[in-house]
Length: 252
Image 1 (cartoon, rainbow, N blue to C red):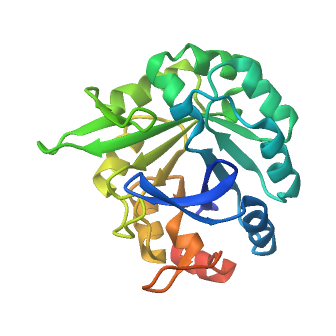
Image 2: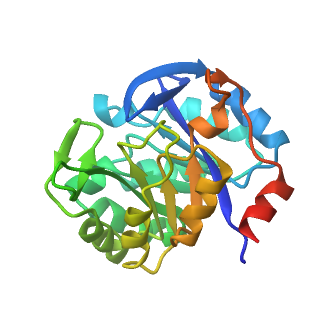
């Protein structure tokens, strides 16, 4: 099997590292730079850094803070949060960010995705999609900036995003976030069956078997938050990452 990327997803709020459950009640768990240094030692594939407050407050990316974090990283970093225009994306790349993640702005218009892809290339353009399953069992887009569901099929939005130039899709299940209950494999299958770009699955990972299941379902990469910042049933804060030989065994 080709190399499968296993990606810690770090959430940032007001400069600190936080973790949520079902996108709610962010709990402070430490300093992002310290986390990055530990992940350096553990030779992680790449990092995803998402500022969960920027779009909600209408702020642009905190470029100075991002530069501080990225300058410590030995691995590629994808950044998302508050990106609304191509000039911001260009500045992020100039600071060392390898991939720019767009979520809220893409819900409003895919023009920003098109412009970023035109200027930076599709390989640097990631569209993130938050998804909730409603009471009828239907998948719907969820805007974390407003806390509201959007009456649109996520797969249709994703297909349009890829047509606009997105070179990678990051799919996050809002209801499984932080639960450790496993990925929504049906969602992963639906998305990967409809696009020909890499798909990163996120939301619900709690053990190595969950990562394996998502890859079997079609994900090109798997991301997780709680799994890599907590240990034990009491969720003690400890940055961790599987040994490379363990990852090779589950993906062989």
